[in-house]
Image (tube, rainbow, N blue to C red; front, top):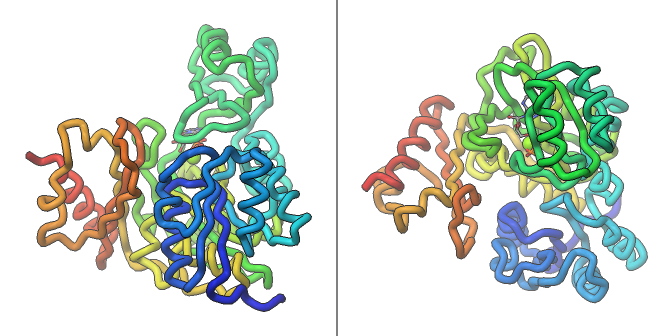
Length: 379
Ligand SMILES: Nc1ncnc2c1ncn2[C@@H]1O[C@H](COP(=O)(O)OP(=O)(O)O)[C@@H](O)[C@H]1O
Ligand SMILES: [Mg+2]
């Protein structure tokens, strides 16, 4: 393997959001500089803590050329973009991790499911649909209930419609607006899990254990680590994530979202980057998911990812509806870590930050984090 990237080198981050911000903060701790390509935004969460913020579209030639020229290695905090950038980087001999091929695959739910199946990871029964007739046929062959999802560019439940009756098919097609869809059976899960695994160019893999996630309105609300599941199920979840990272020859971090039905695990979706459910690793593990991403892309050995019991609760813009949240009330005499992403405008549903608690017991940590969040709006 080639020599590690020396301190003082510049890490190029594609995307200006909070995942890029937390990676940038970690990169600074390692003595690196950071360049962010935002996709158009100015003063973005990541750009605010970077040496260089390039505020052009992801397919703007001048912006991309400059970003590549500034960067010694490039990684992604966001996968729903044109991966032509990876080709520009290849021509300039700048490393891109994970590869553009993995990003292209992860941004299309259909290609993703095929690649998961190839890797030996179980997915829910699914069909692809390009027309209303194909959608009808898909619903007939899978039988209701199903979820129709835009094949590309969905996040936080956007671009998804649940179909419970045959009468729901036409309105669903109308709502999703004539694009290619992935239609999948609704999985009767008892809990949602995720595993975040880092893999380096030497093929070493390190995970953070298994997270248990709870969503509200399709947005991640709480994460607890370790998940309260039997050890055999835990080992199985970790094995599935490692199998995918290995099969895709990933260099970087892979987050694998899974449904646990009580009798089996089914992979929901993957992200080739750090994940919302891994935020608690910042305090819970010696090396966080961001540090692992940095180490993997810079050619440094992976760190220790083992997590102490911990919990994370999300802070959405809704907390700001009555004015500034009560930070003193939430922080005073509480063992809680506050992360705010530096977003200037708080809109309902927008991820503004999170709270993490670490303790001896994950349930206790979750209760402490929830209590702190209640205190934020407790006036
Ligand atoms: N096939 C399914 N069966 C049951 N629940 C689902 C299914 N697909 C999605 N969901 C629910 O919706 C959430 C968001 O869906 P997901 O496919 O992960 O999209 P996103 O890209 O928005 O995260 C999931 O975490 C889960 O709670
Ligand atoms: Mg998801």
